[in-house]
Amino acid sequence: MKTIRLGAATGWSRDKFDAAEDLVEHGNIHYLCFDSMSEITMSAAQVSKIEKPNLPGYDPYLESRMTPILKSCHEKGIKIITNSGWLDPVGAAQKVAEIAKKMGLHNLKVAAVSGGILTETIADMGLDFMEHGEPISSCRDKIVSAEVYLGAKGIVEALEAGADIVITTRVGDGCVYLGPLAYEFKWDFSDYDAIAKGMIIGHLMECGAQVSGGYFADPGYKDVPNLHDVGNPIAEVTEDQIFITKNPHKGGVVSTETCKEQLLYEIQDPSHYYLPDVVADLTKVAFKQVEKNRVEVIIDDGAGLPETDTYKALIGLKEGYMAEEMAVFAGPGAMERAELTKTILNESFKKLNLNASEIRMDYLGLNAIHRESSPASGHIPYEVILRVAIKTETKDEAEKLRIAIDPLAVNGPAGTGKWGSIGGSRVRPIIGLNSALVPKKDVPYEVTIIDLKSTITQ
Image: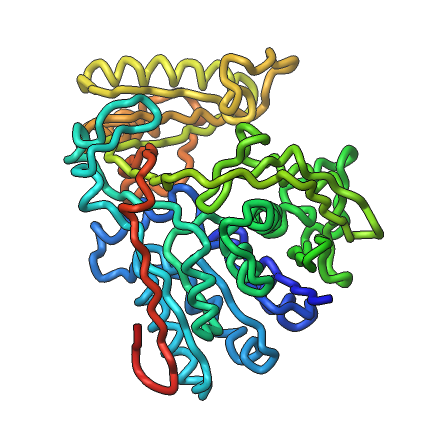
């Protein structure tokens, strides 16, 4: 029976670098899959390109990740699937082709899957925001980015065209796993149970080591051996069975518990998990520990529901600026001095006529996360860090936080320490994320093949 093994190289752009090499060397895999996305990824890339137009529009770590593994993957016949193309998948594919040529790898095909970048057009499509129902056109001047979560069909087309490496723009995270599975098992995209199976596998794998012990450890309650050397997961798939495992020489743990946590990660309604190519019913999923660090994924019939006629688009909007500063206190009376500093800052904000839409002052370690829900402290803290953050419409207003806080060095309470650099600016633009549903018929995609034996062909 045909068995396909897929390794999860990364769970996001700045994930660790050594997992890919370990999977290539020891994982006996057929596909090496990189998820390079987070919700804010492409909006942040848009902002970076505004500030530095010459920056490439793809993952800045693309070259660093591909260079160590390209030759070994080519020699072992391992195909690479990655969504690190971001805003410029064709440029990313050209870069990888350039790296391959320098290595003397001339028998490769690199594919780019493009489409779904609607930044310039979404305000004219007559759509409304999902969050509050307002028309997108009303925020035309604030739009920084708009990208659709494409499905896996472009990946399948690229593999059918003989691609050894497929680089996509934004796709549903699990699509970098669904694509090769649909290709290998010749699944029809109208077979919703099969497509749901592929997306459930993709969802379990998309965050990398989270399903093999990363983001799981809670010492004394949920222990993970050798978390410092956690092994990234491997999905072993046949037409009839699915297993999640990892390389045995690496740390971490693959258990029914890690799988359950990842299955429900970032899920609202488990019975209706909306994805680009299918709606998946996660209540049809069960797990069985078959041996150490090997879990069988059991998916009942009916897990796949018909796809919708829309894609989700993520829209980045300019929402002003934020500034953040911290003041540090230690020793007897640290809390009282921090409280006095809050009073001083509030008076300074009045003098500066600060126009802020939001002001936050938190004590790190005491109430910065749960704020008013934080339980009362049962002791007098020896150290206190006061975090101050403001949100404003303009950069000049945000700069007023520094004007207020820097004088504390000689005008504040005794022993006031400053956190971080005293030079530069801690002001940064805020990109708020909103969403909309875009008819699929209005979102074409394109597959470009770079054949290292020739030139770019369509």
